[in-house]
Length: 491
Image (tube, rainbow, N blue to C red; front, side, top):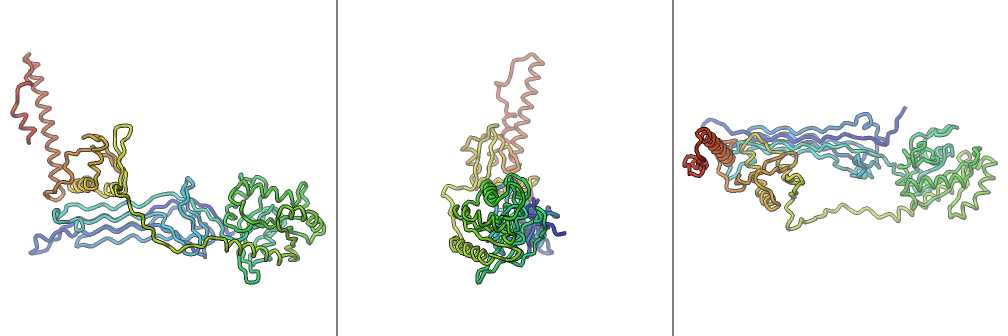
């Protein structure tokens, strides 16, 4: 049995970027071959594309976890890693991509419409790409950037020109089966139609599509019956047709009451007030049905509705109804705003836009937000002093150090960038001319470490002197200069 699925939750994971390589060219008689570490490959992205041959989200219902390929790491001899394969998901026409909170990310309408829903991570640069006139042989490389990871909701909203709405067993499926080539299930019990059916109708030289959705009942917009699940499939319809059963034997049912109940549900669902309506009084082949249709016709026309007495069994009145549908569809198409060609919009940045912000938090810490500083932090190997020094240089050139000082940050304050936390130490002298040392080291970090060690030694020696003075009962001697202690700080 074919299963129709029009709403799924997808767990997406784009590919991670490959790590850059640290390598030094080694060849006989060439002792200074230089760095030759290649770059890592980019991670694969997840892209959705509309395929006319796909009509349901069934595949994603059974396979909700989607992961693209990771990029390969770089290698020596300037060999770059391979990029991860891009993952393309084929979705039906009319698929809406939104977050779990209901924010719409994309509305995919039209064959070939594409949307990159999860972007792959950038590959890290190897030490060959990081070499420059000052740092001729870097002893580090960049890490690959993680790919996007998110959960999205896919909702299918059928793309049709005309939507047939009505109570269960009103004859909607029978009607669409005779005016188009659609073959829906037809039976003599309510809720025979469990999934939307689409049919292509041709009236003279006019071609349009008609959607038959499951029957609506009072309370459908709040979740009763099947209405709430499938009301979304008539959102895109330009014309709505009320299919009314004039031969029903249910007590309290008549065409006027049915239309009032349906209009109340459509109004509560929202967004359908401006759609033109037609009324198809169905089953006039039954004598009682024809009599009732003649009685209520005047009242419906007094409401401004165009009324057609039809019979899906004998095909009476269907030609007039089809041409009326075609007329309203053509009017809707003529009034629609034509789709403009794709244009490239250039939005220049403000002169003072640095691409990052620094915010002071209530706990005394500071948070740096921005695409570039957060990406740089993710790509840094923090167990490599040279890589940390390179990160500090980049942040200083971007202006992060100056901005932190302006907002009141002091040495030792906690600073967050992305998922990392740091004790801010402006004494690192970031941004000054770099003096290269051994690979993987940074003399500025060594200087910072040695100064901290000297301060620790000074504090320890002072503590020992105070304890000795207490033991001897002597007066405090801290007022006397101590050349050895001063030398410790000058180291």
